[in-house]
Image (cartoon, rainbow, N blue to C red):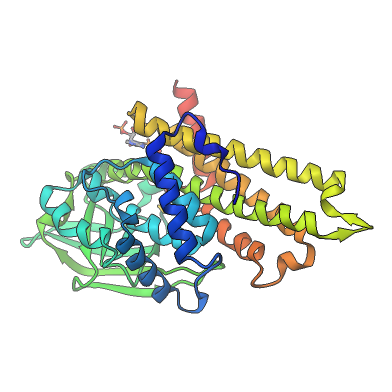
Length: 382
Ligand code: COS
């Protein structure tokens, strides 16, 4: 069992310790300590969502009372990612893919779209990125134009997690009320809407369901609009404010797993007549890894606590947590690979898997460079 002392930090209370115990018990019983079969990630994700729904875990990313609790989300993601990054991915997407509906949806939209995702019967997706608009959301080119029946969507979305298996997509498109970020709106589009097709499935170094979506004369009714026309950018950013600290938490879970594996390995592996762990050079590496993990955890739970308890915008705190936790997880996992030596790059070894799993976290939901931009601007504006 990894270091649990952070559970006593003042950012967390007894309810969080219960959430952590619940997640730990479930993960220990249902996840086999590594990854599900990488050859059929669609089936693995559908089955993980169903099992998490049955166990009630998804109520943390879709609370009945609508009050998303970011500390619980972070604990769940950290624990799931430590056991199996694919399980964390499934959990996170149920939240991100419904976040805009939870935060900005009408009573009817919530009643229609949230229960199937909460039960794990349906999967959700968040469709923001385009071939020429990922970090620069103001460059979104996909259009949504008014028609007699509602709105007509045309364009491409890419890097869409759960693309191909989601029941609905929250889609951001240009409605043109004003230039740039002020002319975007958000829509909930059921996957079976005519005119919406999967243009391409995308394979990446740590496989998970990912696709490019094509919208070609895809007409949705007025009730598909989330919030008001022109509010799309703020809807996207407010959703990311909630979920960015949780990306940091997932990275933290992966780092903790790699750290534990590396410490065990350093104690067992004998080299030059003594365990690796007895060598000052290994001790220095372990010291750096442990410190990076604690620093990341402090920023993650600080951001989550600020969102839950202080309120208001936590854009800067969320960006710091995501940036530091994902960057340091990559460094910790890289050190773990080094401690494992040749075994660390052997396909199937847990640290080799984590090395691939963590990489995308420094890119999605705002690359490190975007987080630097957000933090820099926020500090200068203060
Ligand atoms: N919550 C609410 N409102 C926000 C906000 C937030 N977190 N962040 C920005 N806004 C508001 C701003 O206050 C501003 O409002 P006003 O026009 O009323 O002043 C407006 O939105 C525009 O903000 P800004 O000028 O900062 O927009 P930019 O186009 O410069 O973009 C970045 C800012 C780069 C930070 C933004 O585009 C971003 O986060 N990009 C990364 C997106 C991402 O994560 N992509 C990955 C795909 S999702 S997996």
